[in-house]
Image: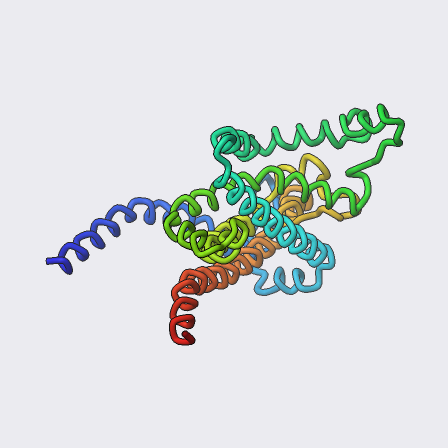
Length: 307
């Protein structure tokens, strides 16, 4: 009977997911197939219509030799690495702090989520009003203090630092929400037992809660990596890839190839390459999540054997 019940639950779960899976397969599969078809084609506009011709691997050979594509991929890798690690670190720290707070817990939960629910366009305009060298509130504050204003988004290093700051500010609350939900699922008796054994709050967080949170942290990291690769709105409105390509993320580069250069085949090839890189990252993160999910049990097993 228990086996039959589990079997029925499995069938019900599969049937419940079937409509969504079919929707993704029909629309997402068709779109992906068209992009792959475009990646192996030369496409030009002639007489108000698209004219297709075979390109073989020509677009991908162009991608290998394209310095602009290489530069945008490097900028994207740096941006994704810094924003993902920083937002996950801050989000996890905030979750641990809020979970321990008794007086400000409800207020913190509300206030910390405000940036995440703001539209990217609104976030871009808010930060543009802060960082603008002419009308920005940051330079006005410096002028009030008798200090010279700065062109915050006018230099290569400053512009990259600014878009990292904006992205971390915008999406750290999402990481906080994910980690906080996982933290609330940890049995408090485990933490209390550690404290009864003499562990401080910091030790309980480092050696009890963080190991149990590792699967959620890896999941949040993966979400932030995907979001970093997809990032477009804030960068397009704040810097538009400048100055001198310092903030030209791969999403901005694909937009430029498609809509400014009208090189549809090559733009599709860059998109396919990015999708393949994300697929590799998915495999890596799935493996990491499984490994971290087994880590507490493995550590307990090793500890029992050594004792």
